Amino acid sequence: MAQASIPQQQALAALVDEYLAFVFQRDPIEATQLGIHDGDDRLSDYSAAAFADEIAQRKRFLHQLDTIDPVGLGPDARMDWEVARIDLATSIRRLEAYPAWDRAPYWIVEQLGKAISALMRKDGQEPAQQGERLLARLNLAPSYLAAAQEALTAATDPLHVEMGLAAVKGLRQFVASAVPGFANQMDEALQCDLMLATPVVLSALDDFERFLLAFEGRALGSFACGPDYFDFLLQHFHLLSLDHRQLDEFGRECMAEDKAALEAYARELDPTRTWMEQIEAIKADHPQGADFLKTYHDEMVRARAHCIAANLITLPKGEHADVQWLPEYLRAGAPLGLMFTTPPFAPGLSSSLVITPLDPEASPDQQRQHMRDNCYAFARSITLHEIYPGHHTQKVHHKLATAHSPMRRYFSSPILVEGWGLYTEDLMEESGFMDEPAVRLFKLRNALWRSARVVVDVGLHTRGMRFEEAVDLMVNEVHLDRRMAEGEVRRYTTHDNPTYPSAYLLGKIAIQTLREQWQAQQGAAYTLKGFHDTLLSFGSPPVRLIAERMVGSAA
Image (cartoon, rainbow, N blue to C red; front, side, top):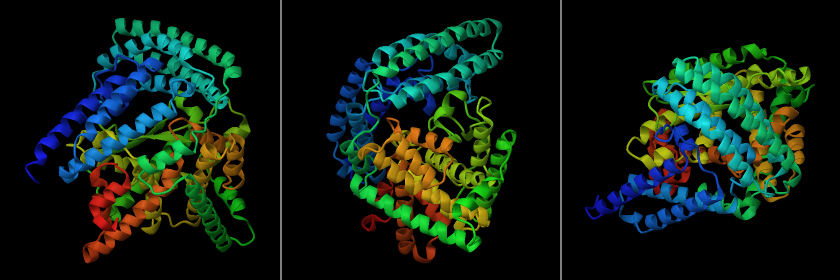
């Protein structure tokens, strides 16, 4: 490395440190999620004034970043520079073009839920310290929710008011049950304070619910982000050379191909029944609600053992994953569950797959559908996607690979993260793990689902597709149960989701393409494990940046 690049690298490192310090100070809820605990006794300020200041500060950081010439930087520092620029440019555009503070009541409630629940997890902190910080956040919750009432405007979509009401219901249940249970672990004085704070928070949630019920008629906005913002994300966040029109065409082509493959395989298995009839029969083989956790845990153990036996990827020493129930306040937007991967700045290498339990208030038919959605074939395919060798494994590699790069440790591209998750489904089938006919058929159905996500993603945000149309497409074309389809599409409409549903398929294809290029260059030295370990050795930037490092001009 040329000596002249040292001052530039030092300037970049100092700027990144200043920028991340600002990010964590600005949004202590996000910081807690990432494993930064300096602001655990605070809640984030989501007022219009705070967001205006944030935009100004991010523009200042972007201007300073652009004074650093990336050409003279070393390979790792240059990737840090590129990632920092992506993060700043896209965050500024998002805050200006598609803000959440004035139109996303579900997000306001979910963030509060994350702020509370994160302080109840065992992550190396002293329990008493967690309790004190939890108490501080509980005491701030009423003013936080009151400020949200002031901030919401007619730009809110009616669907997002409905989602906000569901989130309030879930968070109220969570606070009423989880906080007293956590308080029992504290000393008498702190326990008393936590118990006194709980009904105050519940009352504030009741007030926010009444506000949202009255606000429904004033919510006149649309969740659609529009084609300009959508194209910006494709080209400047994901670093892809296509626009929404090309993506829509691509998604429809993939849907047709995936449907043909699904129908062909179904005919091989049983020419007398359609693929939908066969899927229905497969879904009839499902665990009972009480057995969800054991089912997913057993599949996790099987998938991990296969990764080792097939020598697919390094499983670093100390990594650990488990399966738990999903907190109540998140269940409205997660019909089956979520994956909580190891926080990048926290100690340890542990992740949790959190499963949505049966709703005791749901009708018997809804409960039956929920159990069928968690059938054994689905559990096998999704557990490997989420844990081994999927998201948990990738995030462990991310954490270890970015030990000396705070910027890349902070940043994650869905093209890499979700692309990797989907890629691992093909990988596990290729290596002999998903060889049962029922699982293979379910995987082909899931491939159609991921292609349909692209069409729905583009349709909702750029082509005027209504929520009901998107749900019908998922029900009629992919054969999702309506309850699951509604939960999926709600998630696609959220303020931070445009282009995200498309990232699964686009990222998988990018990784497969890079693998072919890498194999051609490596020749006899090529191994699957070598490719996977190298791919994940850069953190989680867009795949294009990794390809430039791994195969150079071939990318």
